[in-house]
Length: 114
Length: 310
Image (cartoon, rainbow over all chains, first blue to last red; front, side, top):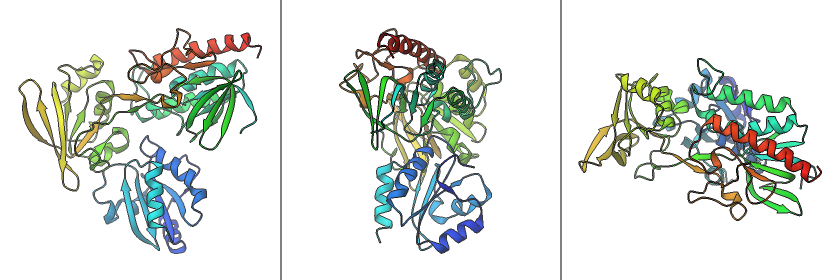
C-alpha cells in the first residue's frame, strides 16, 4: 500500500470501474521511492485544481499493476513511476520516471482541456 | 498566514532535520518540520545502509528514516509534508517561513534542506530519462533484470547503488572521471571481487546513445585520449550533489558551490537561523555527520531561546 493521500487503485475491477465511469483519469504507478514521491506530491497538490480529473496512484508491485506495465505505451519504459493519462478509457499520454509539477500541469492542460 | 508561533521551524526531513526535531521536541519546544516531499531525505532512496551505527547487518534506508520520523513524532514534532519553502525572512525578532500556500512564523529556523543529485549534462541524458537513464537503482533496478548497465560515478553513492543493482543485472561497468575510486574501501573490495563488475577509471562519459531506449554509451579514456562505445541498456547516475539553498540566498552566506556557511554552533550570520546536514558547507557528508550537526544546532537553539526569554 502506498503511503499517500491519493486514492489508490488496488485491483482489476477498480481499474475497469474507474475508466468506465470517468472521462479523465490520471494513474501514477510506482513505489515510495525518490522518483515517485515527487509525482505523488504534485498530484496531491494539483487534485483540487482539476476537479474534472480523477487522480489515482497504484503500487507498482501488486498484480493489478500488470495492467499499466502491459500497456503498449509503456513498452519502452525503464524508470518508475509509470504515469498514464486516460481520456474516455483510452491512453492519451504516458510518461516514465520523475516529472515535476510544471510538466504534469502542462500534460493535464493539454490532454484534459475539454 | 498560520497564526501559531513555533519555537523552532525545521526545513527538511532527512537525517539532520529529523534529529534536530527529536532533540528540540524533547526540550518541549513547539516544533514544526516542513518537507518539500515526504520525510526521509536522500537515505530513503538507499537500498542498504551499512555504516550507520546500531545496525550490525545494515538497514534499509526507508526503514531507517521511518524510525527517525516516528521518534520525532513521538516527542511532539508537527510534520507537514509536501510543503516546499520558498523564502525565509527575519522580521522583528521572528522568522517568517514562506511556502507557496502558507506563511509560518518561528522564533528560530533550522535549515536541513539537504541536496539533490547532479545531472550529467551529456547528450542523451534528458532524452532517455525513464528509458534507460536512472538516478535511483533502488527504484528502477528490477526493471534491468539480466541487462548490462553502466554506473556513472564511483563515490559511495555510486558503489552502494551499484551493489544494489547486482541483484538484478547481468553486468555493471563503473565509469569514474578521476583516476581513483573515492568510496569506502570495503565497498571497493566487495565490488572489485564480483565477477559482474568492470571499472573504467579516468574515463569521461561523452554521450548516451540509442533509439527508443538506451543502447550504448560513448566514453573517453582521458589518458589515452581515445573514445569507445560500450553497449549497455541502462545508465545509473551518481556524480555528486547540489545544495538546496536557493531559498536562503541573500540571508545566508554561501560558499562557491552554494552550500551554507555557519559557525561552530551551526548558526549563520543571522541570529536564530541554523544550517545542518548536507546543505552545510563542509568536506564530509554522511548520515552520522548530519545527525551530529543537528544535535549541536538543537542545543544551540535551546540556549538561544533562553537568551531571548522564550
